[in-house]
Image (cartoon, rainbow over all chains, first blue to last red; front, side, top):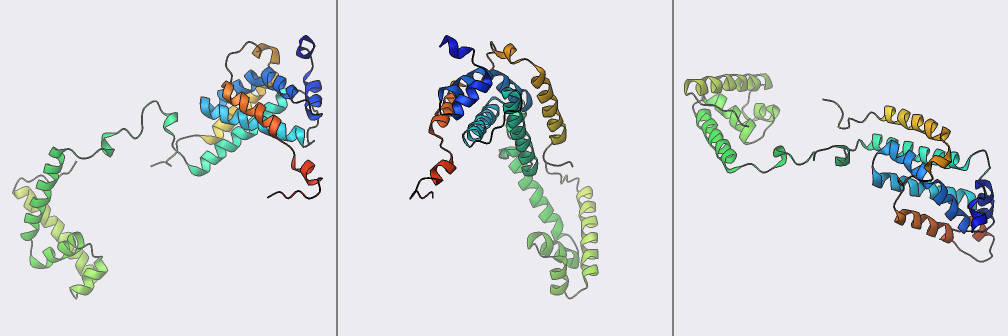
Length: 197
Length: 68
């Protein structure tokens, strides 16, 4: 046991390739802190760093066992280069997917009032505003009211409105413009606020 | 409005290059007492993989083996 502790990385690599599986255990134990610290320094997330660490050593094992390893310097440098490539792959995948991860933020992105259900009060205000708009629309001249109803209540396009009312698209657009101007004027005259939160 | 992601990916790649050059120069010995390591579960998984893995080219040499 004492003798094994002083074996060089090169010796352990050769032993592992030759079939001595405990040699890789020693290499992992010897270099795990350095390789993992490097990965963690880059990605700053424990779980992600562990995934990359595991993948890096799996590649190391495959490369050694497939006889594709050529001793070209420090073993730890070689492992860190493999980890580095995996980190870059991760960044590029993330870039392509344009992912937003909650892990990158100190607060919960999705815990926002904007995503919550409307309160009873908000629902009442909305209902009130919509009923006031409907009341104002009834006060419009017939040709303008017709365009507003077709556009906003029946969701027709201006082309469809023009065809149904036998006018040009420009006329339909013009009627809508006058309808909106009149609606604003009517709301002001009656001191009605049509703002929705 | 900018893209949905605010990450500066190029800067992160450069940062990874920088840290690689720094760690590469650090002697392995200074990490021998570091507690900043992956969980034991991850280490055990790798060791188990090392014991279970056999290269495909070795299997190919054996007559009659079909790899799906």
